Length: 287
Image (cartoon, rainbow, N blue to C red; front, top):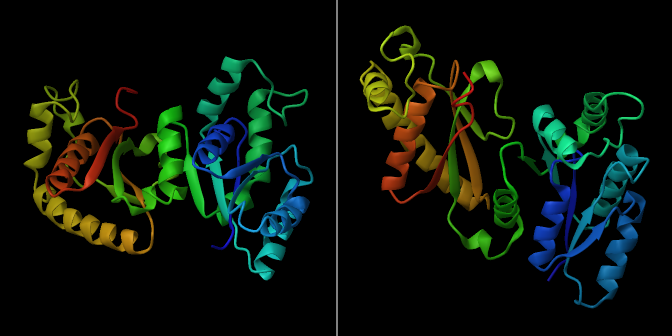
């Protein structure tokens, strides 16, 4: 069996330790805060163990300075030697990171004498290229510890790799920004907005009156029929390529009416065909 290598990196406070603990529980040999320049040495030691170590997960972050050049150089050198590392990048929104750092009352590693958000901005800019080159990017803003562990297990556990594709259908509001970890984004703003119907405005897409209004609009049923077929085709392709998790984002202006109703209906249709599907409403209640 060839050596498997995962590099866990990303934003401070985004859940690297949780991901590392999950991989350790799954039987990976985990090394925290390893300087990237020592990745090759770690691989050599694992190869020399004669099968005792077959899966290594390395957590690297801003403590391993200089971070950017060393990591990219180390990964390129390993690839030339025949070892292809997978990079897991964890990120979260500024709001989520600020909340997490405030809860533990610790400064951000790049904060210095400035504000917490200044440190977050510096780190995000420093890691921009690494995020773009990562094999898997997980946004943990809305995930609890158990949900993050489930995502990591689905990506790196051999048994989980035999499981069916897990689909999450998420509603969102465009005015709050796109979900950064969405695999697909679809726009429901082509449908009339219940916000402009006085008796529907205070309700949400989970209420029967709004749902019936949205689904009765011209194009709604045709969209659901075609998009359901497309998602099922996509799911089959994902499974063939070894992808076990996908996030489908359905958006409208505020994430309250149209996207919520369409998300609920699409998820119900997919579940009825045997798809493992979950529903999330990212922005419901923000207005």
